[in-house]
Structures are given as C-alpha cells and as structure tokens.
Image 1 (cartoon, rainbow, N blue to C red):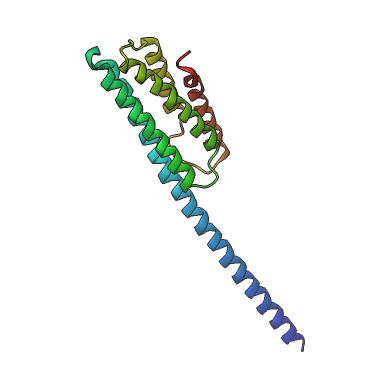
Image 2 (image 1 turned 180 degrees about the vertical axis):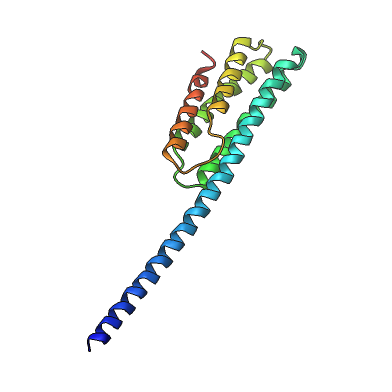
Length: 173
C-alpha cells in the first residue's frame, strides 16, 4: 500500500512537471516571437530615420536653385518616418514612450510642412532652421539604440533619443 501511494505521488509530480514545462516552453516561444517582431519593426524604423538623415545631408550639398525640391524630399522622408512609427506602435507590444514620439514627429512634420509652404510662396528658407533640423535628426539617429532589446537600458536609451526631437517642435517661431 505504501508503494502505491509513493507511485501515485511520483506520477502526480511528473504530470505537474510536464504541464509546467509545457507552459514555460509556450511562454518562451511567445516571448521570442514578440521580441522578433519588435526587432523587425524597430529595424525598419531606424532605417527610415537613417534615410531621413541621408536626405538632409544631400540637401546641404546641392545647389540652392533646387531648394524647394530638397525641402519636399525632406518633408516626404519625415512623413515616412511617421508611417514607420505608426507601424511600430500597431505591430509591437510594450514599446517605450512610442505615443509621445509619434506625437512629437507629427508636430515636427506639421512645422516642417509650414516651412515648405513658405518656400512655395516665395519666402526664402532660413538656413539656421535647416541646420537645426540636420543637427537634431543626427543627434536623434546617433542616440537611438542600434538594435532592439527587451531591457530597461534599451527603454532608457530610446527615451533619451526621443528627447532630441523636442527642439524641432517649434521651428516657425
């Protein structure tokens, strides 16, 4: 009788361990897929910011008679960064301060849009504003973490990078 009781206890413990390990395995797979999705969308976002930075660099190099085209290219790149931020928000979980950054980029897009409108109306673009935009986007890009990690350090670094967009929220004043 004692052996049967021990055998039943061992069977119950083994079943509980199997159930627990299956649950842990499933959780790990879900977590791994979530990290992969976050990483993929984050990489796309960083790539789009890099293209914005490249576009800004090109606008500094080309002759000034194509200034409106250059500004429009930058404006288009800003819109595409906004799109990437929206994709990042909609397709990832637990991304730090994404709503604030989306809002800041929307304001920046609008502010830059007013500069493009002024340029279309014949007003000369302010080179100091252009320098400020180039500088802040470069700071933002260089401060962004290179790869996504599910960690506090990543969140802190991402938030610190996002603060570099704040000075671009009032370009027209």
